[in-house]
Length: 408
Length: 115
Image 1 (cartoon, rainbow over the protein chains, first blue to last red):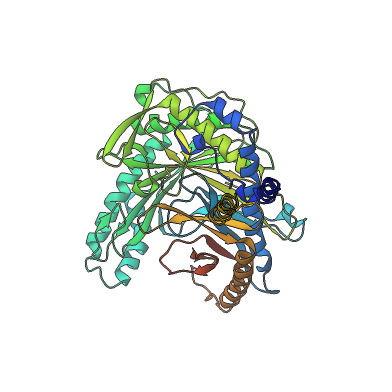
Image 2: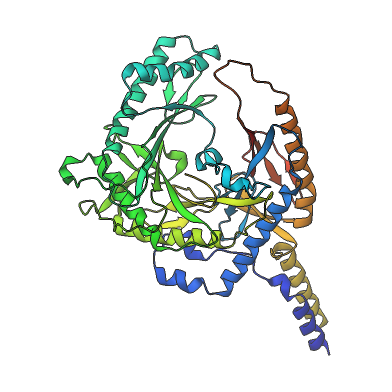
């Protein structure tokens, strides 16, 4: 009788032992073996994770129901950004205080009138995801005078703080950084586009101290600035430039052309639910000579390179590899490591498959509701070249943007 | 035998408290402790929604109303078109609350001016 009682007690409380939603261990490691990923997608653990993820999404979506715009207001709540994180043991949850987010989710309100979808311009990814900073737009065709004009308002802003005394000194310092940045932008612009993916944006963060000093890392109450370069938008199918000899390209042009052709491996992972994987961001550092390299952590990166997919439909052009490049350089704390390129490519495929999981579980919402439209999945880049979903204790260096109803 | 039963029952209860199921009534909250180590709390879904939903609703109304009072000066080259507000949330044992401003937050509201 006692055994029966004990058994029934265990059975009735067995749901309390139910596993929390944990991501498979190889998601948060450098493992690149595809077989184990495919195997895990059918496991009970994945069902549990899917259920837990859905539970969090539903709870978050429930928060926005009261966020209605006041009738007649010229201002409206356009979007809401929330974050999720993965604990060291793999549990997926809402991001509390501190730590690295694994997922940044942007919920955008669908127009209440379905016909408005046809006439309104879809929200832009830039506007929904970019962190605020004073931006200095730099194009490769700008003269030094034009650069000075672009920088002047930012210098005025720094002067307005009352702490910066030497306007000319700050202007010269900023101009020096801008000219160097422009040089790198020229190299990026000369990189050949050999497939649907190409580098379209380069950002460099600068911090101006109250004394007018410029640093590449955050210092005290510094004014945050951002140098930004965009490659011109291209219409229609992916442009194919005449092939260039490898020795004609700069190190930076080779770097971004190689990464762009690696990113094309993401296209082998199909997405559903109207989502598309069409943007990737990597954290980069620069050598004294201005050569770009991978940086393990966003926090240690001084710049960001953004890659986008240029075509709407499946690519018809098979990306050619920059065969000359077999390794990438990555800075990890105090050491520099060479990561095998093949491993990076395998890692990207795994990362795309992980992003696909999060997109597949996002519900489609009705008109007038906030719908999950952008999923930024953050990955840690390992010394082996592999990629793993970042944990709250980790350091993200690569971001995949999966979007729907958003223009890039 | 009774002792064994009591011990097992206690174990069940302790396990349930430490590791509640996520599907349904609890939401895991992941963060870092002061030593930089990963920490995991659980908040009841109901409490999460009861506290946060009205707050976000009131916040969105208040911000939209305040921005509506802002009039752009005619002829000025710059105008306010977009406002982003970050909410910092801290997970306590069973509730969320607005934390210190410098603490990273979970929710960011972006307001846009209608054309």
